[in-house]
Image 1 (cartoon, rainbow, N blue to C red):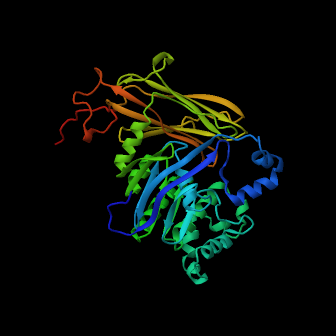
Image 2 (image 1 turned 180 degrees about the horizontal axis):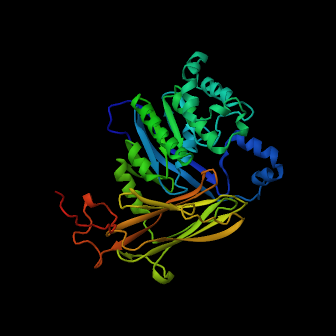
Image 3 (image 1 turned 90 degrees about the vertical axis):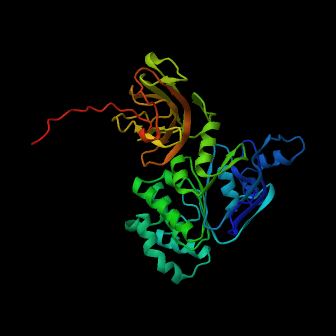
Length: 419
């Protein structure tokens, strides 16, 4: 569905769809990958093509998508896990081929979809900067001009002549984003890069994507961080079940997404072999499950997670969101000096929210699971939604925009008038 902008679309998508067999890794099903898979597992490949071979059910990860993205736009893409967000970016990056429909990209495209994507593991950081620039069609003198900016932005100066196979995950992504943002690509595709790194790096990422868009280039940004979507993007879309469910301003689309995911508790579909948040449940006094809360009541959330392998330094973070998805407060086990179990298996932890904290409204709880380096292993935003009802403790005027959403009882003292 074309935008109302008079600017020329740099991305045109018509009837785009991608189908997978259940159990396939995304990216399989293309000829080059099928050949590789057949070489690795010839018996499995023969079973698929011989008469009577087992056929797996198929599912559309993305279907019937029509969309234009114009020059200078920052398009945010939101939706639950499995909605088709990353599939869309993989298609636009030509990592995998569409099952149906077509798309047109006008301009050189830089992608940051996975750690180290486009890098050669045996090359140094310096060599990979030049490799990426060459792939984008740039000349050496053009890359020379931007080299120092790229290295400074990434923060890997000390290791720029070290093979990137020795980089941490965070260093990998920081350098990858720096290259993608600073080299001359007209279209930048970004998938959750803000999940990696500290607050200063995330701020630099937001600023760099703004600079890219102001320069007339196009950014497509997938994120579970509703705050970043609203602060950064000029337009947003909501994908669910592989289909476009909403399109418009970031505020309206985020509101539609939060409304579509309203639930009093969260329970995941198990993904074998991956670190995962299994469930999130809100409880009241005495541990009884809650679907509604009262302003004066204490709350607790019980979080369950699973680790398939040891993960030292694993961290859980819970973020309370206002009805408009504005983050109100965030807490983690590290804040409480609590070390979580890092051994394989299922584990549970409880986090308590104080009473007399929230004004009436519908609030959301986001939960994320991180490794010791801060890499996001799993995230649900929001994991659950719960209403807070007024009671005798609620301020007389209730919620008003200028008062915010949090009610903190602050001591006031009358002082004697000075001379």
